[in-house]
Length: 372
Ligand SMILES: *[C@@H]1O[C@H](CO)[C@@H](O)[C@H](O)[C@H]1NC(C)=O
Image (tube, rainbow, N blue to C red):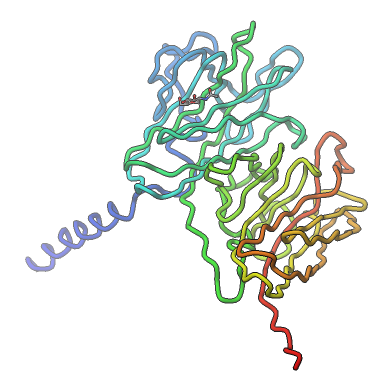
């Protein structure tokens, strides 16, 4: 009896030691990442947050407001995507949270939802571990005004401050984006396999998608040196692509895919290793996300200098088409690029951009029969 009762606390201790080690950074919402826990009434003046530690788990600076869903601004009713509260970052305002247990050298992706509230262009500067990204808030993507954005960085220490800052200065200090649902995901490095020279060709590895959001996650275009939230891939040119999941969209294979929604202004690319002179086959799946994106869609694919255009007639209800581009490698590196040939909008909401879905990208070496 005595022995048994000793064994239980020892077991608990051991369990806890392992759970602490394994704890690190957990994928999902940050502590109070949905801002459902708010300031005490004494720390609010109207909606304005007074004091830098008033919102549990966060540090704030500048003109930060705590916004309940349904609040009116002019003739606009502010809707909050998750729960009943969000924050608004006014002029030069920022929110900050310290994360513990990051792994030095590991890549993390931050996902958050944001909505513009005033007419002018708004930007958010997201930073961590000395790296930063300026994300343009574009309202052209989802009909309710909210979009989710992803940004990735490499941790330089086990304690990391993540900061979301509105660098804007406008006449009305209450202008500025609403923020909700701040989440994190550890990104696993993608690997090439013997079968497929493309890394993360099925797009299964990528930023956190906040459950219940019906608008996917925008992956903004980046300059080459930055860390992509979509391992293996770079988003090029001006505009974002959308990362979608099978909970809310039709996905050709697996649980995740990308939607190419900004025409030629957004391309997704990867450089693969090839043997000069060797023959390869690039194959990929084109489809639609079952999001009322109807009509003639077209994806252009490049493998080095060779290219193909794949037409896809979309009924907007989900569907797939497999395409193959045979190519001969011209050098030791071959650049794969995909984009949509033109803009499309949803037939149920002409203000929302949409486009073809890309999934399941593979490159295999093709054995050619030698001629004598
Ligand atoms: C964004 O924030 C980081 C960190 O505070 C800063 O170093 C960088 O200059 C800022 N970028 C812009 C464009 O404001």
